[in-house]
Amino acid sequence: MASEAAHITVPGPHGDREVRISSPSRVLWPEAGITKLDLARYLVAVGGPFIEANGDRPVSLQRFSGGIDGEQFFSKNPPKGTPDYVRSEMVVYPSGRTHPQLVLDEPAAAVWAAQMNTIVFHPWASRAERSDYPDQLRIDLDPQPGTDFDDAKPVAVELRAVLGEAGLDAFIKTSGNRGLHVFAPIRPEWEFLEVRHAVIAAARELERRMPDAVTTHWWKEERGERIFVDYNQANRDRTMAGAYSPRALAHAPVSCPIEWSELDRADPAEFTILTVPERLSTTGDPWAAMGEKPASIDVLLEWWARDLENGLGELPFPPDYPKMPGEPPRVQPSRAKKPS
Image (cartoon, rainbow, N blue to C red; front, side):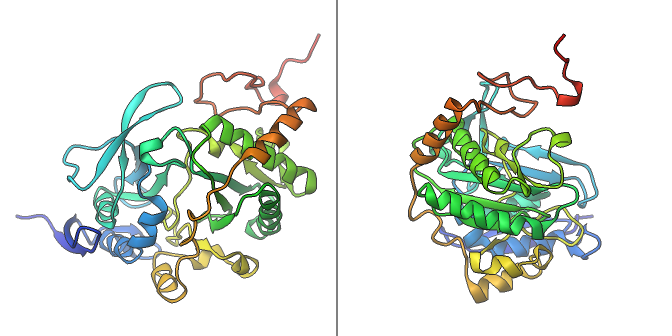
């Protein structure tokens, strides 16, 4: 007996493609009643802006064996049977290992990824052909316990001002959960470590201006009820959910670009797989002009150098990274050995 399947037509730059969706009635989001076929149709509806934001970049696919409550894993390299319209590029990981990573170039590639049970898409900050050099400066504003999305809003506004003073034009999106993501297009002339230092410089300036609301402390025990500026998302092979990517949460939210003028009244729960296509068709894509004016990070690197001279050095890297030059000990303060 043949297994259940559906075929979906996906427009793209090379014409229509037919993508087969197996188990189309499988429910991925039980609370919202959203199926695998619904997800595929969503990706067709948002296909243009989705690829504009996430295409031509190494991408990690967060795949689920069943629905959002099932087992999950990350897929980076092309699996067996990858169609010829899905390519890969060699990238270098923090360990120094080189490996091919998936790249999505058209909406059909995103729908194929959904067929492979992908729910969340995690694009790199760099383009596939120049993967060592980010063309986006990305900052994750992460509300800590005792704070929420509304607390992140004034922090994002001030961060926009900080970046503006450094000559960068900031764009914003919801994370799809409780936080906010602020992106700024940059020229792909600096390696990941330099961009990380630029992010740290901006984060420290933000923390100086809003010390009661913002923290750059890596260790959770030191953060308090503040918005954490997660500078480690600027590292090589560290990613966040892409623009228009679904999230694996009960109400099927989407990480959604918004206009700065919308931020004050924005409610992340309103941006879902069911609502975002209509939003795009009526209001357009707030990130449509994202890459038109890439900027320099020279001013932020000057701030980084200034802070170094004032005794503010490197900050901790993620635990899976090799030990980095100038990095402080990777031990939380409460467990650090006290000087004898």
